[in-house]
Amino acid sequence: MIQTKHLEKTYRNGFRAVKDLSLHVEKGDIFGFLGPNGAGKTTTIRMLDGLLTPTRGKVLIGGMEVDGHASEIRRMIGVVPESHGYYYWMTAKEYLQYFYALFNHGGSDEKYLRALLAKVGLADKADVPVGQFSRGMKQRLGIAKALVNRPQIIFLDEPTLGLDPRGQREIQQLLFDINKSDGITIFITSHMLKDIEVLCNKVCIIKDGSLVEQGSIRELQEKYRDGYSMLLQTSDNEAAEGLIRKLKKVARVAGEDGQLLIECESGLSDDEVLSVKHELVTAILSNGLDIREMTHKTLSMEDIFFKVTDAEKEGIA
Amino acid sequence: MNQSMVKKELRESLYESKGLWMIAAVSVILTALCVLATTIREASAFSQTDVLQYAIKAVLFLTLMVCMVLGASSFVAEREENTLESLLLTPISKLQLTLSKYVGSLLIGFVLLLVSVPYILAISAGSGLTASALFITFFCGLLTLLAFTGIAVMLSVLLESTKASILTSVLILLVLTFPAFLKGTLKLSAVGRFFLSIDPIACCFNLMEKMLVDQVSVFSLMQYVLPLLVFAAIGIALLVWGSGKVSLKGEK
Image (tube, rainbow over all chains, first blue to last red; front, side, top):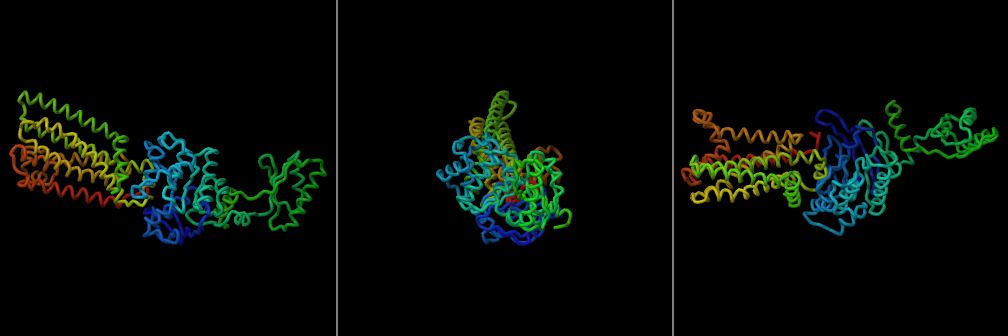
C-alpha cells in the first residue's frame, strides 16, 4: 500500500533530513513510525503525501508513484498533520462540508458528513463553532476531516500529542475502529510509545533520518529480548533480592515500582528458564517469604525504542 | 478557481478579517467627505469637479488599502494558523488556491466600489459628469485592484509574517502613489515625466483630470489607459508566478 525506495531528502541549507529510507506498509496495517525529535518523521510523512519532493528515491502509494500523480494520491489519502489548524469561526459541520466540497467539486453529502461526525463522537456538536472545542474534540474533528474523501490510507502525525489520558484512549479507540471497520491503512507517528504498542501491528524506528529497525512488535520483542525477564512481588522485596542474586543464571535484579525485575542470562533454553524459576520460588519460600505476584515481563515498545536508539548511538546496531 | 474556496474567503474576509467593519468604515469616511465637500463647495473654495476628483481618489485609495490588507494576509495567515497544510493536501492546485484567495479579496474591493456609487452620484449631481465619474471609478478601480491585490497576494505567499506582508504591500502602494503628487519642476523634469507616464496611480489621476476637467474621451487617452492595462497584467502575472511558490512554514 505504501512503499518507499531509497528515499532521501536534503533541504536547501544542506541538512539531510531523511537518508536512504525504504519502507513497506501492507494494506490494512496500522504502521507506527517512531523516532526521536528531529529524526525526520514529519519530513517523511510530507514526502509520502506529496507535500515535499524527495531529493532521491521513490514513493509509491497504492502502486502509484507520488511524483506526477499528486492529485490522484490526495484523493486516496487523508492526513492529520502534527500542527493541525482549524477555522475557528466555522462550525464542525461547516468545516467538514468545506473540505468535502474541495474534494468533490463543490458537492455536499449531508448524510455522510453527519455519519462522520457520529463516528468521531461529535454528532451533537455539529453546529458548535470549532473555536469552542477542546483539544481532544479538535483532534477528533481533524480525523473526521481526514476521512471526508473516503481515503484508503490515513497519515497521522502525533495524533495524541497534548491530550489527557482519556483523550488519548478515545483517539486510540477511534483509530482502531477506523482500521477494523473500514479497512483503512493507518500510518502513525507518535512520541506516545504506549499508543504505538496498543495500536500498531508493525513499527519502524528511524534516527537521524535513517532507518534503524522495522518489523512487527512481536518480531522486535523477540529480537531485542536479552534474556527471559519477570516481575516479582514478595512480602519482603529487599530480602528476596539478596536471595535471588545468589542464584545461578540470573543476570540482573533491580527494584521497579515496588516489584523486582529479574533478568535471566541470555540464550537460556525453555527448560533452563523453568529451572531458574523453580530455584527462585524454592529459595524465597524456604526463607519464609511470601510470593504475592510473579509475572512474565515482555519488552514494552519503550524498552525496544530505547534499546534500538541507544544501540544506534553506541554504534552497536 | 474554486467556488467553495471563494465563498469561504468571502465569509472569512467579512466576518473574521473585519471586512464588514472595513466597508462600514469606508462608508463613514465617504459620508464625512461628502459632508465636508458640500460645505466647502458652498463656500466656493473648490469647484464641483475638484470635489468629485477628490472623492474618486479617496474611493480608489481606500478600496486599494482594504484589498491589499486582505490580500497580503491571505496566505500568510493560513500559514500562521497552520491551516495551509490541509488545503495543500486537497486535490486543489496551488494556482486554483491562489486564484480563489485573489478573487475573494477582489470581490470585497468590488463591493467597496459599489458602496461608493451613491456618494459619487450625490457629488456629481447636476454636473453632467456622473457617467464619466462612474466610468473612471470602476475602470481605474478595477484595473488597479487587479494589479495591487495580485501583488499583495503574491507577497503573502513569499513572506513569512502577516506584519511583513501587509507593511510591504502598503509601502508599494505608497511608493507608487508618490509620483502622482509630484509638483512644479519635478513634474516637468525628464525623470518626473518618465515616472508620471508609467506610474499607474498617476495615470489614473491624469485620466480622471482629462476626462472630468477637459472632458476628453477615454479613446483619446490611451497614453494613460495602456500603462494601467500593463500594470494589471503585471500584477496578475506576479500572482500566477507566486502561486508556484506556495509552501508551508519553514519549508523555504
